[in-house]
Image (cartoon, rainbow, N blue to C red; front, side, top):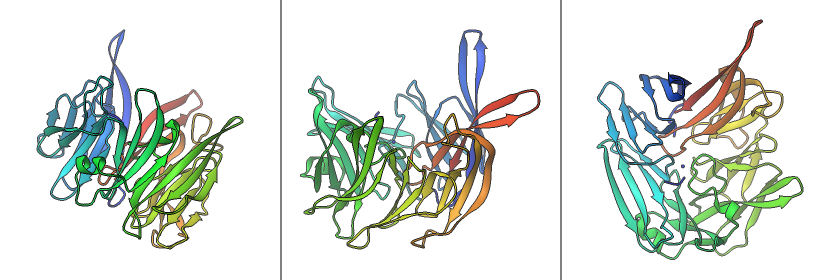
Length: 379
């Protein structure tokens, strides 16, 4: 399957390791510490966590999908082959994830796999008429659908379409004329279906119709330039922000408010689309942002010398802001690591699934320097 809300922030730490079975064979194993208890998994991809239902689901390279329940027997779903979710629904009554498989070049139809994590059931629906669809993504509110399309035989004619999903199934929406259609390059279409790492999002705007935030990518000497555009029906695209590093538009939105992270500067931008002229506020705060939740005002910031990748090392902290203010005041809430490197956000970002921060903890002693991979999941 091609590529993928916290209620209040809690943390899950995953200590990752490789356990040797023989001299030539290594087995992945993760020990998961959560507020609800500890579990172990041999599957490396966290897909969904639900506080409503007290369970956690992982994707495995061999197709298995274990659903681990706290204080109750779990389930093992076979042959799911789902490593990224195109949509996640988590309510008090249900919990499901969906994965999209594009049509085969031999003429086989596209399909949508729906997995009910409570019942442990899998259903697959063929999507006739979606032969040109490469990937889909349903927004965190479940009311807007994005589809990346192309001439899949010639690898050209890329476009993104946005569809009002209210009162419709994915199958119906994807085959109706789109509310918006935007010509793009292959690179610009590539983030559809990536709930955390995506740089293009849709939502139902104040007009009651879908609007799209699209990142344009322009090659320049030594790299690329990124421009964030607002697309609405019947109007010319409006440029909102430019950067020399990648832009990440975070998947969770609160009403007409969204958040973005500028990969060049590491700054957090809060975007309000409620007025005719969109307002972008760059938050004044020391450090490079890795994640921010517009709903509850919680985030993660790296404070080191340089970028939070292999060359940067420094503290990694949870931050809390006032999400109701246009220019929020933020403060440190909890120290994650006094010395971290290789820090980045990953995992699904739909409602209930959370986002996890992957980093390496650095411990220095007179005898050695130890690097320990870690994962903390934000609920």
